[in-house]
View 1 (cartoon, rainbow, N blue to C red):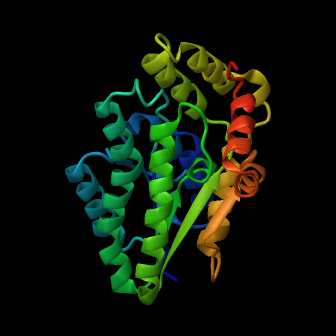
View 2 (cartoon, rainbow, N blue to C red; view 1 turned 30 degrees about the vertical axis):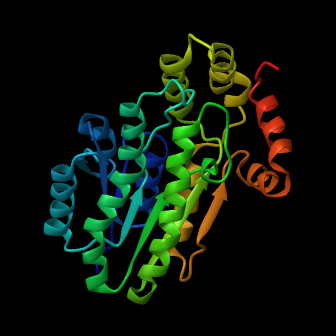
Length: 276
């Protein structure tokens, strides 16, 4: 049997790293993409094929897909994991930063998918895995642009799933909850850059403290929880369309469905420690 090939973006740490290692353990040929390949060298020693890729650069995306196809002739699994959290009050966040958040979290994932799909269609098989977030179903204070990207990727995934069904290609959405990665610290840093001073400073201080909370960090799920979920999805004969997993994901998504808007506003504001 020909070895299947997987391409995982954002593979240098966190969910991407854990996913790459999991798929290697399952026998896949795995290309791990990141802007800095020096951070992939330890993974290369464990079987990963490092791939330099900037998801905001079309030439970089084309070159990455071309290399995978030239070396293996196929892409069976694409895991769109690259992304970050840009927090800050909507009034404060620059349009430049807002566009970059969409470029990385949405347009990069969609463009890479566009480049991979012809190769999947030619084989009439494949799985596109889009890593959204429980943040694609809920909202948190000062996270407007981040949540907008995740809501957008959820909608795009739904449309894509229907479009690709006739070609035998699955589209799976993974909705992580709180995961022990660098994400929280990066989001807190971005938040302070945008809103540490001015009218939203009190809210920014509270949310940044929450994002960096040691108490909260102890509750977070390890990235392997998401990697294991992705592995189940890509090896299933008929995968689910969505997998919500990791700390808080199912309860918070469930509460968002059940609670009226203003009741959820109160709940999420209190959990973030916002001043009242």
